[in-house]
Image 1: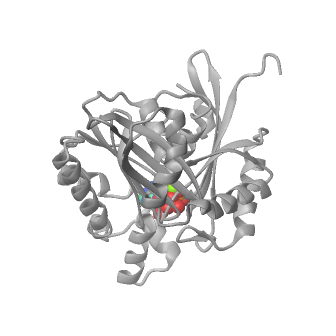
Image 2: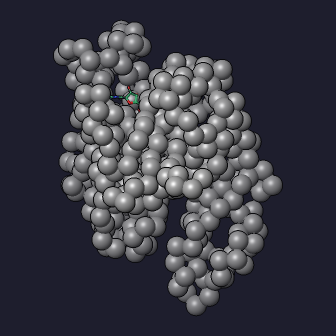
Length: 346
Ligand SMILES: Nc1ncnc2c1ncn2[C@@H]1O[C@H](COP(=O)(O)OP(=O)(O)OP(=O)(O)O)[C@@H](O)[C@H]1O
Ligand SMILES: [Mg+2]
């Protein structure tokens, strides 16, 4: 339509909540014109599996209705075990030939039948040895993509693009923060039951992994240790009720796997000379707001560590947040913003 502004919807279906953002292209760059967060029942999505399909569909529908979003086309994402991200070496080829060759290469690197996965790739380095190049291989199970796409369609939307959570986070961060080519940055998106981790240098994700930990891990530990109900534990975690519990201690235990994983990945990248020492950590996701998580990582890795604001370079009317603090909500919207930014760039 003539004169119609370019806009994009990013939809992030998490285990705790569904997030949607609408971005519009303006001369000043992208503007957030609408957003919504709809809580899900704790049992709706468990271990990345959609257990109560109808309640998730209803949540998305309610969100569309309450926000008044009219557009139907969405950019959405998948994550977890059914997505495999691997760095591989293969013969140096041009983009088109590589696209074909990746199909064969994948057979060695993907633990699923290649006909059962959707493949994508990114050439990271073209000068490895005399004839090789380094490629980031991404494989996602078709079945999971189909389940995801069907769910989105059932909610009355049209899935236009399906991305991966960790890449959407990277996209949101790179759009809002400046990094030098030498910077080695870790993006950590802490959700309810899953944490997307990536280590990025000069736009290339050198390490990407989803860990099975998040706010729920801490809430469950609190619940067990202090005989709280699930709701009470979540309220305590979110600081909605006064408490005397040592939350940072619970966070530390829950984050053990995260710290170990990062330590190993960074050591490997350093010995293989792919990325020297870490220079920065940026956190996002609802779980990044847990007491003590930022401090723990800052102390452990000794680099500037911040809870990111993926709306830093996105304009919006303050009224959109109805008095709540936009910078407190924004970290939870990182995936959805990164997705919408695929279509409305900075
Ligand atoms: N203010 C807060 N303080 C501490 N924790 C919070 C706060 N707000 C939300 N959380 C926690 O963040 C988690 C939800 O984060 P998020 O919305 O990013 O997850 P999700 O995307 O739905 O889940 P996942 O990505 O794991 O499937 C929950 O565990 C929730 O209790
Ligand atoms: Mg999430």
